[in-house]
Image (cartoon, rainbow over the protein chains, first blue to last red):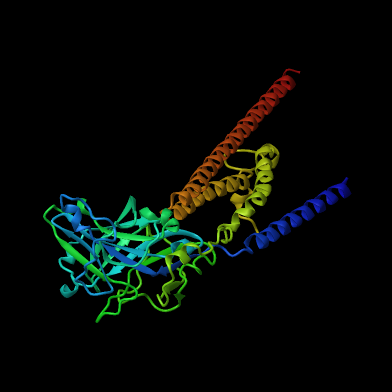
Length: 333
Length: 102
């Protein structure tokens, strides 16, 4: 009998050791994949354009067909405009971004537009600008104050851009409402928010194209993406480089909902050295599902259950009278 | 190494286990909130809330319910033991009376 008890205890000990080894092995296997990290990538535009309403549309004869009205821009080349005059839109800008090439899951995005406040370039009352950001999935081409019908926009979700005066005047927009559509967009649209401005208000904001070569061009607009997924943002921009933040406004922080937000592990910047056509960006291969499983610890759950359930069953079926003579004060020793 | 006296109580191991379940549940709720709060994308928030909040709530409820059951078992056992003591004393009294009459 005593021999049988000893064998049983030995078997139980071996079983526990095997269980512990299985758990440790599962932990090693489960945690081997690299956990998905959140990275921050700045994407610069590859092409910009700005459009103004066709003035012939105000005549009784109606709008003159596209291309027949000459584009007339008294503003310097390389400047982009968003404007409102007496509550009516006078200019809107498009910035083509290679967002379709971004792999991984975009969890947050922010737009920064450094402003050119020089009145000689057309800017006035920049501080009272009410700009909204929409997305477009239409092919974008370079245009400078074109009277042609502008590319279609998707303003079913918009993000307001706010004017920030320091350290340098710029517009900032949290693209949170647009983040789930970014990867299917060809670019962002900046247009005046007439609904947020009084009908008598007039203003015009000016910023520089990425290839501006004027006297003192500001840094181009940029979109900062927070991306979840291992090696997610490598192909975010065809011209990505490890240089510093774009322009003089410094790196913008992605929007953070609470203090639990993960600090970006790396910051990369896209320097617009070459401007590939929108067509080439749109046809860029897009990696899907390259990210490793974000929470490999979940693979331990079946083993945890494997250990916990017998423990609970044992706890709930142990004879408490035999375990120790019950009394309110505890076991009688 | 001597175990603390309170660990010798037959309820201690099981209550520790159930307290661990409750703490794990709260940790799951906190983790779910952390994951949901760091993104604005609803498709990422939903699984975090379902797994974290609901899973955590289930763990907390299960731990509390099992602890309650175990405490009930213990008090039932105490009551049974006291009843047996009472019956033993009554039987001893009857025996003493019988011996006195004889």
